Image (cartoon, rainbow, N blue to C red):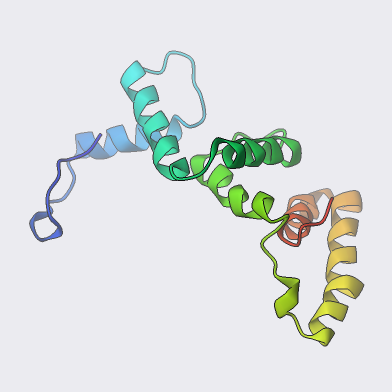
Length: 139
């Protein structure tokens, strides 16, 4: 579903048909029975573009991490790609770059608050999980 390999200096506005096809592809990341095969193929192409360059182990770990923390939401390619960094090093937050005061704040307030949100406040549970995952903590 490309409009051709045109250089940036020759770009033309996308046609309504092309935009409709691209949006249909984007929305097809949420599976719907009866989806045409070309749309399924285009959606898989998006996944491949987003996950290319990562090892199968990295992709698998990110998928499992997503399934564990977001069991009722369907992932998009970016959801999985964004988790690869978090899973790789046990989190993306680099505690070695924090000052002593920042470490105290992290351990004394931020992480306990995130755990409380996960445990006690459904509306903030996702944010709490993401904060804990960022810092390589279990929720």
